[in-house]
Length: 200
Image 1 (cartoon, helix red, strand yellow):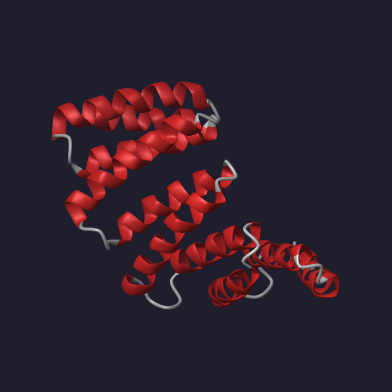
Image 2 (cartoon, rainbow, N blue to C red; image 1 turned 30 degrees about the horizontal axis):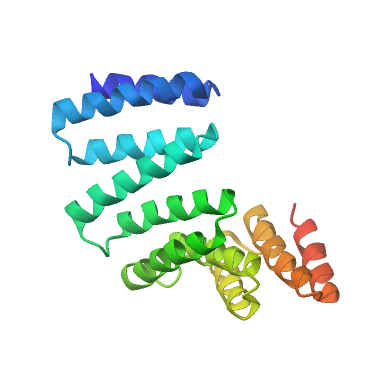
């Protein structure tokens, strides 16, 4: 039952039928809990999908509650320093960013970054994601001395992974340019934006 519901969820999601996907995701979560028990990996997977679809739908309070539930299960099953825990923390931090809750996002994303630095290699793409996200938040909070090195580290990893001309790198450069704009470093910002545009 759970597997069939997840297939149905995936089909609705790919079609952009997000409200219908959310209904199916709720059913899939209940099915996973009934079939596998409340702490099973499939329950965790269902929670992450349900939280993600609610985030897309703008149901932020619901998504936050779901992600926190997923975090509790993940920490119980895997410990507090597992990469899967960092993944959920990153989702939660992203949710706070979208709601302009930058102080909350910073605390969550710093924890995610610490876990990934300890458990993943120095060039891992998930580490780049954490660096860029935390750098963006620090920029929004006016912590430019923190933001710049974080963003530059993230850019370096993505350049190594994708190559310097990849659109993902262009987005990273735009984030750093925005940080420079906040500091009124317009010459540096313009140079980065020109580099970014040449890659899009």
